[in-house]
Each structure stands twice: as C-alpha cells, then as structure tokens.
Length: 285
Ligand SMILES: CC(C)(COP(=O)(O)OP(=O)(O)OC[C@H]1O[C@@H](n2cnc3c(N)ncnc32)[C@H](O)[C@@H]1OP(=O)(O)O)[C@@H](O)C(=O)NCCC(=O)NCCS
Image (cartoon, rainbow, N blue to C red; front, side, top):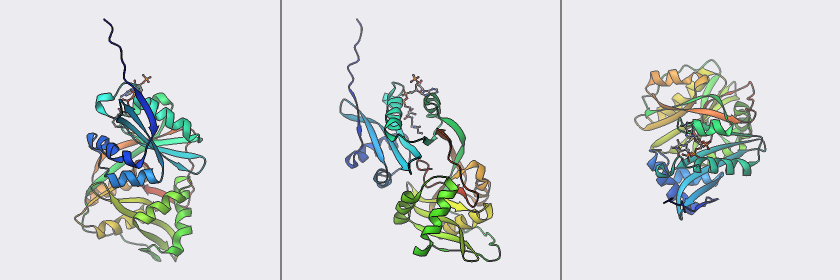
C-alpha cells in the first residue's frame, strides 16, 4: 500500500515572537546566536519561517543594502526535515521577494550544494577566528597615525569608508551597529582612514566591521579592541584575501571554521581607499 505524505508546509513572514524557535534551530546547529542577537538581526531585516504541521522547522533572514544588494542568512532547516526541498523553497521565496540585482550570502559547507544549484557563484573564503583575547598585541602606528574613540563628527567619513570598502550602501546597517556597540577610528593627520566596531554577540564579543587602508591599519584597530577585552571571548570573521588571518593566528586568535562568500548576480565593486578586514557578522557580510 502506498504511503501518502500529508505533511502541510507553510511559509510565512518571521515575527519577533518566532525568535525563540529560531534560536532553538541555531542551538541544534551549535550556532552561537543568542535570542538578543537574532532579534537585532530581524529588526534590521526581514525573515521567513517554514512551518510543518504548525511547528517552525526552517528559517531564512535577509538584509537589503540599498536597491542593488541584499544578503541572506540564518538559513536553517531542522535536521529531521532536511533533504526534502525546504531549504530550496525558503531561499527561492526570499530571493523572489527581495527583487534586487544581486543576492549574496556566506555559505557553510552544508549549504554549498543548495546555493550552487540556485545559481550562486563562489567569490572567496571567510575565516572565523575566535578565542580568549590575548594581552594587547603591540602594533606600531606610523607617524601621524592614531586610534581614538569615534565621535559624532566622524559619522560621514566612517559611512563613506564602509560603503567604499564593501561596494554597498551600508549606512542603515552602520547606524544599527553603532547604536549597539562601540567604535574607534584610525586617523592619519586627522583624516579618518579606517574604523572598527565591537559589540556583544554569541559567546562574547564580536570585533567588526573592521575597515582599514591596509593590513597595518587593520592590525592597529583590532589590537585596540583585543586590548580592552584581554581574557574575554572574542570573535572576528575575516576575508581570507585580507591577510589578517595569519596575524590573528600569531597573536592567539585561531581560525575555527570557514564559510564561502557567494553571489547570485554581479559582485559589488569596492573602492580603492579602504578594504574590509572584518565582517559585521557572518550573516551580514
Ligand atoms: C543547507 C540547508 C539549509 C539545506 O536545506 P535542505 O532543506 O536540506 O535542502 P533541500 O532539500 O531544499 O535541497 C535543495 C537542493 O540542494 C541539494 N543539496 C543539498 N545538500 C547538498 C549537498 N551537500 N551537495 C549537493 N547538493 C545538495 C539538494 O539535492 C537539492 O537539490 P534539488 O532541489 O535539485 O533536488 C540545510 O542542510 C541546513 O539547515 N543545514 C545546516 C545549517 C546550515 O549550514 N545552513 C546553511 C547556512 S549558509
């Protein structure tokens, strides 16, 4: 006798009240996101949940960066429901409703197959570095250079640096990150050349975004934040191509995992005045 599958799958908008269930799915994957982290991610973006017989078994979130770009993240299907097309349904539904030119994401190894089938191409690797922050590593600043707390007067310059380094409109995200964390700027002869934000996330502190004119500048910014958190758990997600990873290993913040940066559509084109050395979060890019 044939067994009929009577499972009812419903995709619907994610609401604040769903975050507890989303956190449970993160927990099942051993992801570090706290409910607070997920609430903040949802507040600056949107999400869909997949329900089977009234129970949330799949999630996806998305964030728009201007009219051209969006990122997907928190893409999870409960282990017991994987391999039945739910991940594809969630990702396709979110991509359709975003309606932007380019959708990006940072894929776990488990997600690579799905995103490849959806047409995403690989752009590079991101390494997750974390550990207990070492005593502040010594990083020599160059003549005329200093790291100082960010003030209100730095806002426009910092925004311009972030947009240039990512090739995307990151203003709204930056405002949200600054409301939630602390920032320092790197200056050369009083001109802002970089910045780094630090905020609570997951198991401890997350350093990012980190934007700097070069590797030496990025080290100075990260060293500043590590120095304020010596002995506390710190995390930073670093593009492989940035070269910062080797230094983080040296100072005692080892790589513990990696994801693959992928895009469906033309990749954003960063400017030349600053580069991205640390992500705002793995999900946000
Ligand atoms: C990644 C994930 C969301 C996929 O969800 P899913 O519901 O199991 O995926 P689907 O059943 O919709 O599979 C979609 C397609 O990808 C393919 N696929 C899935 N995993 C694959 C793999 N490892 N290699 C190749 N193809 C794969 C499937 O064959 C399917 O193809 P089809 O639609 O042509 O038949 C799910 O495995 C998951 O939650 N993993 C843990 C959390 C995670 O890593 N999330 C990704 C974060 S970026």
